[in-house]
Structures are given as C-alpha cells and as structure tokens.
Image: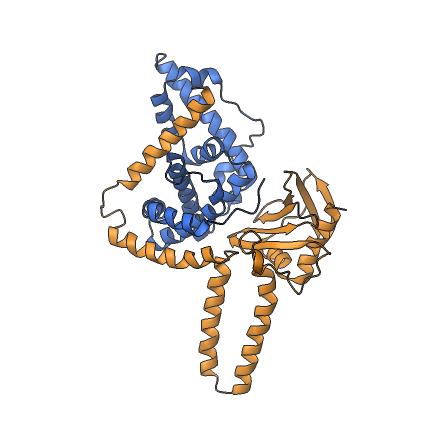
Length: 223
Length: 183
C-alpha cells in the first residue's frame, strides 16, 4: 500500500467507524426517538421529492410559490369585489410569467424536449441559459451554453465572496468586475473589487437587465 | 470539469440514499443542533448538497459514501445553526486567527512510520472542521471549489482549513511517534 493510499484508507476507516457509532447509537433522552426519526423522514421526503422530480430543483421557489398561492387564495376569498379579485389574479399570472422564464428553465440533460429560452431576455444569438439556481442559502449560480454548444459557463457567487467568478469547462477561473450592475472589465486570476450581497446577485439573476449584464459578460469572454 | 450533472437516474439514486442514510443523518444533525426542526432543515439542506454531487458517488453503499454523507450532514447542520444564530463565515473567529498562505505537505516519512490503527485514531482525534475538508480532498477527490460548495464554506476558508488540517495531523503524528517510536 503506498502512502497516499494508506492515508486515504485511514480516513475512510475513521469515518466509517464514526458513522457506525452514530448509526448504532442507543435511544436515550438526549437523542431522537425512532418515532421522531420516522416523522421527520416523512416530512423531509415530502419536501424534497418534488424538487427531485423538477428539472431545476428550486425548492425555495416552489415552497415560496406555494405559500404565496395559498395566501392569495385566502385573500381572494376575503375580498368580495370581483374586479379586485381579477386584478389580483392578473398580477399573479403576470409575475408568474416574468419569473418562470428565468427561474424554471429546464436543465438540458434532464429534459431535452422541454428546453426553451427565457422569452423576456435578450440573449445573444446562439447562447442558451441552461440553469439558474439559488437553492442554497447565500449561493447562486447560472449555467450558460455557448454557441458552439461546447462550453458551459458556471457563473456563481457565494454570499460574502469577493465578487463574481466564472468557471469554464476548461477549468479557468475568471473574475468579473462589475460596478453598479454594469460589466466594466474582466480580470484574469485577479481580485475583483466589488463584494456582492445576496440581494445584488439575486437582482442580477432575476431581472432582465441583470441577466443582460451576465450575458454581456459571456459575450466579452468569447469575443 | 462536468458542470451539469448526469441526472438520468437521479430520483432512483436519491431514493436509495434517502432510505439508507436519512435516519442516521437526522441523528447526526440533532446531535449538533439539539433541535428537531433545525435537524430536519439540516438534513433537507444536506440532500440538496448531495444532489449536486450525486454523479460522483460511484457506490452509494461504500464506506467512502458513508463518510461523505456524515461530512455533508455535519457541515449542513453547522450552517443551519450558524444561520439561526446570525453568524456568518466572516465572523467565525476560527478562520480569522491566522492567515496561513503557505501550503503544507504531510511528510511522507511520518506517514510511513506510523501504524495504520494509530493513523486512524489520530484522524478521529482531529478537529472535525479540519478532518472534514481533508476527507473531501483526499477521499472524495473534490476540488477546492467543489468542497466549498458542498460544505457551504468560502474557498479561502477551505484552503486554510486544508493547510491547518495537514499541519495539525502532522503535529499529532510526530507527537505520538516521539512518545512511542515503535508505533
């Protein structure tokens, strides 16, 4: 056994031992009961399964949408005026149209037949937004397929990070410098100067001009 | 680097992983959060992270996968707990104490001298924040970026923890060898 393999095996063994200890832990007043575990397993499965079936797995948006829909139904029930009710429904439909184009774009490998481009976005010819996701707190990413269909760009930002970085399939990391939502330049392997907040990057991904900034960046990258 | 995962059998694999590991994951998460609802959130968060790496799990029943699940759950639980307490990574004092820039390689000689059982017990004594990143690096063979996504940490934090983890492991092994040179 060479030394790297010895180290790797030791790690696997150490973690396997630890896992077994937790798995075989006896039920005490300080641990979850079997009933607790079954109850929470059921709840988690219910919450996660729809996102596994959904191509983009946007659990937060599905959850938020569901709560919003419930609230709207309640509101509509309380407001007797049909005109107001109609306005509310129109508003919901309008918003759904606006956001679904950006947030629910199917993943190409999962649902090839459903693939469509967001209607509201001005995407340069040949570029395709494959996936936009923000389902981890403080972490957002967008995948864009280039005209030659050969490169996926993963545009991502973590909350509190030092800007927006782009990983290409070739493994290059390129920093993007953005000032007031305008792409002003690209720095290779340098440090970007702007720190994005969740809100700012949420803006970039969820609005048309925000997405245009990202698309412009893709253009510059492959110019 | 494949960015969009192959998801053909994802729901099936997901179900198998869920059936096999979710109970233990809940136990791990509860052990850290001490709150049933936070533990539930943590396990849910863990599954979201696992789905991002699903295509890399070759054998879901292997000991490697068990360790991986343990690591993900532990870190997701800490993230959920931090979020509840309003602590961000930047405020976490552990990673601000020192700025480790130089990389550290474990001395091969130390590894070769120490016995396998002793190595396992030393790894078990390592602080989890270091052991987890080293596991992701050495066993799962993930890049710094992938580790940062999987553990919900910043890339800088991952690099620092890898370096400190290697140093700590080396120090502890040397200490043990000095105490008992025929390990």
